[in-house]
Amino acid sequence: MTKAPAPDVPQGVPVGVLAVFSISLVLLVGLGITAWVSAWPPRPYPASTPEEMLDSMTAMVTAGEAGRLPELIEIAPPDDTTTDRERMADLYIRLGRVLEAAGDLTDTAADQFEPEIVQLREEIERGEVPSLMGSLADAARSSGGGVNLGFGGGPQGRETASRSVAALLVDPYRQLAEGRDRITTTPIDADTVALLWDGYPAIPPFGLLVRRQDDGVWKLVPPTQIPMIQRVLPRTESEYQIWGSLLATLENLLVDLEKGVRSGRIKSIEGLASKAIESAIVPMGMVMMAYGNAVQERDKPDGP
Image (tube, rainbow, N blue to C red; front, top):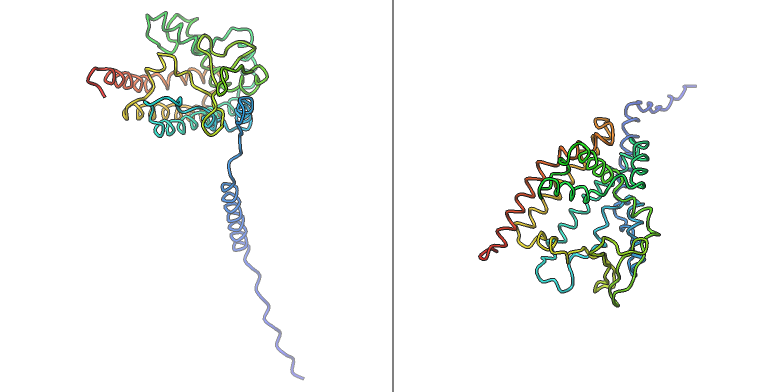
């Protein structure tokens, strides 16, 4: 009896082909998951009351979404007819990117400089590190009115300014994230409340307000009633463009600082503050000079 030929046996799949197939499958699945996740609606942050708005701001920070804080900031007062709301909304988007970059720097610094940050926080609690704005004001007084980012007032003044910059860079949202229970409100009218910190007006002597918008959402009101702030608000197209350049410069600076900390190129909080001041003083100075010139042109009798 003739023996039937053996059936063809499939050859084994080469290991290399199997590996390529597996990797491709993982990548495709990963891309599919990424697309699916990116299609999710953003996390809701309600603000139907002033307290809910404050809670949402705190939640944004603790969730690592500080870049969304401008969503709860009023673009312009209801009776403001001089602000280009569309252009200002664009600036708020840029501001959100700055705040997001600041949050990334904070997270990276917390991993790299934890003991130094603990010490810095203790200095802040003891009142040994003033706010950055206070340091700039002191520097301006000591230099006859010219703000120089703390490079005046002698070694002590420079050290104080450096610590203030460091505190701002590595701990910008701490009071909002950890001090929510210290923030309360008091009514001004049916649609406006004032913020209190430990029972006293926030940002004295000007105060800080929260206002209900036309859609019922409560938003933080920037202190634009202060004449100094009113004067520097953008009004012309060139001024909006300069503000955009300023925010882009800040974002790039924060991104570069975060990379420096993560790579180990920046090795301490002191080094971080020094690098920030060194990197900011020329480009920021140039942008602010350009803006000052633009505001002077606007203020001319025949200006725009």
